[in-house]
Length: 440
Image (cartoon, rainbow, N blue to C red; front, side, top):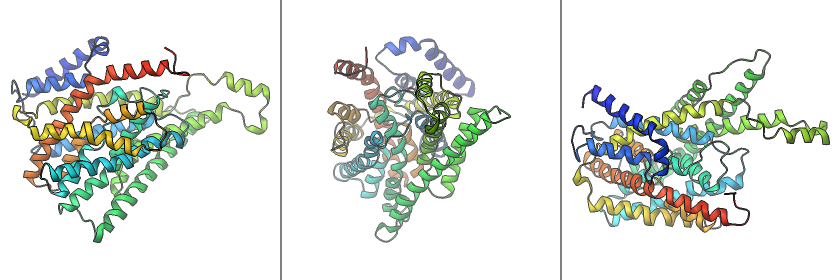
């Protein structure tokens, strides 16, 4: 396909989705399924008008997936409810740490005993497919900044954090394959790739997001009443935080997510402080006035102003990347080896790790079941794979992991996409029937 044909294909698809969005919402399929079908139709599986080779184009695909994940992580962080409550964040933290580790361990064991892969390759494969995806999972994630649904919050927050918490396992797998230094008994890996990279990444993100929130608030409400370009500020924060994090060898995905969280939390706190009088000056009358103003429209903030733009960028990247996924598949890509692994991941590794990781968390069985099923895999998995290829993964092993990962992502788009609407509708019907549930 030449450039003109690509413009026609993507433009026609965008027009189709834009004109049929209402019908699409009522249908049983999601938009990524349509993008995938278009890629398969025009790719080598059917018409063979184009073929995207992930191995030859790994550098390009690494950049494309990296940008897509960063945009989605920032959007997810902005939608985190404020104020921050540790008891509410406990479940996603457990999912991004304990459940993540258990998933990697189970995948590595399956790869070792069933697929016959080396231990390092098994751990690397586990790190590639363990993170849930912030790009393709929009149907089960928070819809806006005031969405307080616990299930959507859990899935969104988990996807925001585990795209960074998977990186230490990527480095561990590469280290066991001789592509990364681990140090004696893994000491360098533990200190540098686990402790330093995680703490530094979160720290850089929190400091940068908080600083921008204070600066934007001061400029907007100072004597000069500066106008701000929220879209540019959001993109600038995302890019600067990621760049600094990479330079100091910390996890940039964590930094970007927590920079957005800190931006949103700090601006919300400043807004509450501006609306609520100081305690020493509060009277019954002023308290009543503050309560009466509690439902006023949100004040102008960088986080709110940049969210819509980021989500549009995320949707555009989703269109392009899912079409390319469809254009990588051949008919013989569907081996029992790859399909069997994907089913093991969806039906065994993910649910077991979620149930085990959330023991004692207080989460209901229904929430655990939904969380265990909707571990959507997608663009993040492709990024980790391309990252490993670009850092010296042998060609034979790269080809095997590419086939397995593409089948995992494709089946996730199909199975999770077909089931998301009926399962979420059933979940909400049951929730409304419970005492104190949301109104119909």
